[in-house]
Image 1: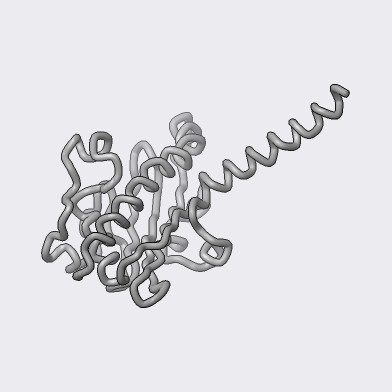
Image 2: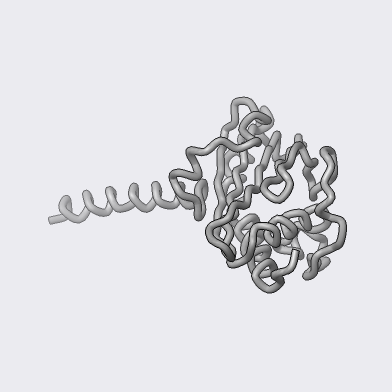
Length: 193
């Protein structure tokens, strides 16, 4: 009788662990989205992590893209952690959608962009390592958009790199999930680009 209970529990634990890893690495994304090519793919060689985050937004692509451009001035995640307690702006700032390669976005630099569609950012951070991120927005319907984010990460060598490789995927999920939910809420409130 004991063996019968031990086997399903062990198997269930593996299923839960695989599901948890899947959520941490692929939150909200579809298999088709994960198979696609993104501009960030070419910016990091030998990544240890490839992470996806995605959600639907009940707003037009132009509106969602404008909110992505707001990342130039605020992170839109947990402001008390990564914005020194200052509240991220709740209204669009004129001119932030006038993009140029090299512009600052939080701890990143704008590596490339497709107007009205995607923003690709990169950083070579002393703690997090080399990261490239593409935020891509596409129409899902006349008034609905799909926002997909892909992160490609290469860690630093040594103990700090080892540690970051283990905690970055989960900690990024916490922060970026909040960021995307906040951007969705703001985009859905304001429909004018």
